Image (cartoon, rainbow, N blue to C red; front, side, top):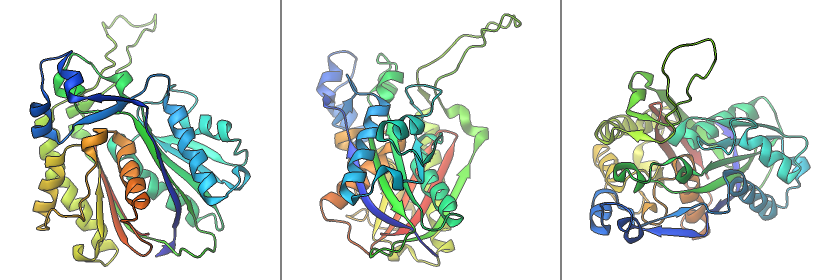
Length: 327
């Protein structure tokens, strides 16, 4: 077990709120239909905000809360699948915006598992870089990539960003990275796809059409999540030599309230305050969802120093990722 202290958390969401009733004005759906199947009531969508501006907002909050200067940041990782550009990375853009001129910066594309993957990658970087500090941010602007005429996907997703400032420097927090389990199931990747780029080279004759919007086989993804997420959490707990009863909070990716309830049931745990939910307010914000939920729990005083957290994401790839931390 190594020192891996979360010094601060933060979140940023767009000002524009779209309710289920708003969606009912543009597609064949209703508040009752969406709420009963997903637990979602509202979602925030970008207007003049961008993926980069949301991530930068989070980074600036984290620096202000910890009184860390940009020059002290060694690593910036952004988990996203909806960057403003394919190049430069969102992380590099954030680095430039906050003038963290010493920091290396890169994005992680692991869809809804991105924040958990990012925690593991950040821990690995810090293991070979003593006395370092990093920013890990999950940020998404999925509303730009949704087919707003497809009620099976459009009702699910929202925009937002959340993040943490972490360090392995000597401090009074003494947080720890306890264990992790990252898995990919690429053979099932066609169950959740987005952003196909057409081959427009003059040297090919294949009829290849671009297909930007998100497509999802909801039943396959639901079945995948309730089978694989409990196994991922259990494997990480075994690695950390912890029992599930030792975990204070299971901070799961907010894809669907029914999935979170089913995961708790599969692990033979009560669906109680240890499985917090905020999907009613934000919808599915992919790589940002765990970080937004963590920031809210810390802000509300529900998570306290010394608590054991299971951060677990699942989604496109298909992928799962669980990290156990002592907060």
